[in-house]
Length: 162
Image 1 (cartoon, rainbow, N blue to C red):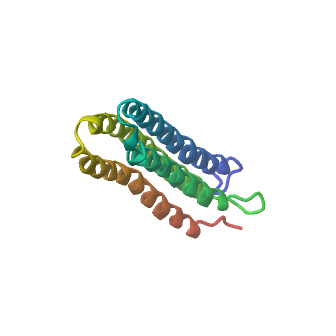
Image 2 (image 1 turned 180 degrees about the horizontal axis):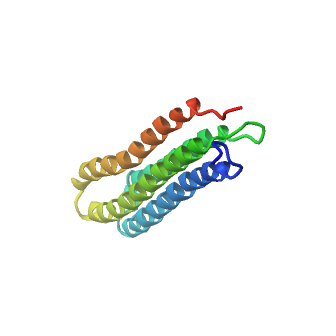
Image 3 (image 1 turned 90 degrees about the horizontal axis):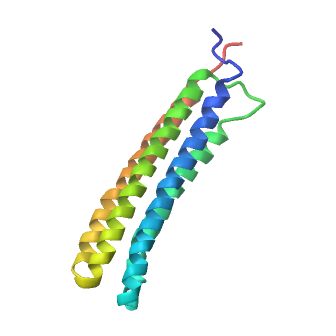
């Protein structure tokens, strides 16, 4: 079996798409779910809307994590260079690590953002608690980004035999 088969870049591109698509789906869910809570809050206390945008901003950061990993992986793919199967599998794993953690972080941010923003209408002390919980949910996506970056550095040693 060849170390550099012609189908190896497929796995690299699958990692690119997994990182971008899954993290963006998580960010979109978080934005929409938190946005629903913000619109509910805005009907009762419109002056609190700007402070309540924190979950939406944090959801957007999740999509940026996927974008960073996708650009780094895509930078290693070139039609002129040989691409080992090992690199394809590592890039697929890196994309899935970033994408799946981004998806789960986006869901967590959306659910927490919706619930806490609605509670913020009735009790302003909830705000600090909401921010802390959102930070911990955001860190899930950051863990995936870090793992993907570490995995991406491992592909520099992979070479195709001449």
